[in-house]
Image (cartoon, rainbow, N blue to C red; front, side, top):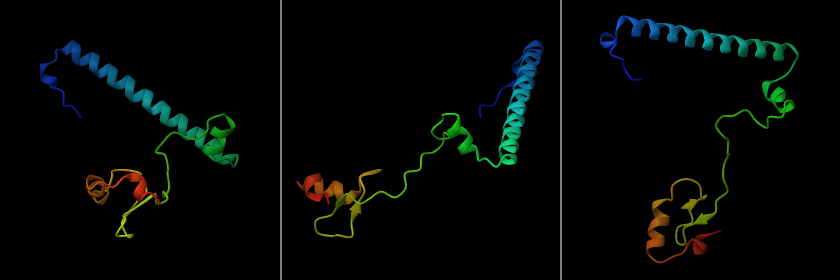
Length: 109
């Protein structure tokens, strides 16, 4: 977080900042309170929030996407214990094999 030099601000600037901070804290508190009310209401009706959002047309609550385990798509030609799913950073063994003239298709399962 960026630290503000409050001593460099005038009294009126400090008052302005104070009122903006109070407004932001009030807004956040209201949002949190509303979220808690919705959670309690949904729970009292036996609904999960995901079900509620699905009924409202939302496909999924936004957040980190769960991919799950990926199937192995590439295998080292000499050492079958070296595999790669194709997700994430290319492994060093694959980089080495490509630099030696092999193609991805030759290592594809």
